Image (tube, rainbow, N blue to C red; front, side, top):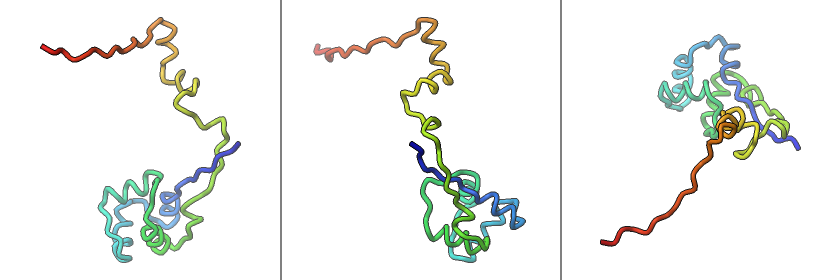
Length: 117
């Protein structure tokens, strides 16, 4: 089963508009009533946002003269690429298999009663 995900293409859209610095986006957003710090704008451009205020999205679309489809692309992730915390391939990548091969195992925790003196 395939899962849906999205890609955030703000940097690409900015580049096609000749904006190669996130600081140049700040005044464009300010003109539209969106006041973000330089670090917030940088994170908005450099990272894929998990949550996004719709007013910010509309301001970006207006400032860059683009649509939401230009900024956000739908992608399908094959089920084999999705991992869980118990995924064996993730354990091998993190080096846990080496620890297991050498015989290192976690010790069982024991709960002791409090000292009543």
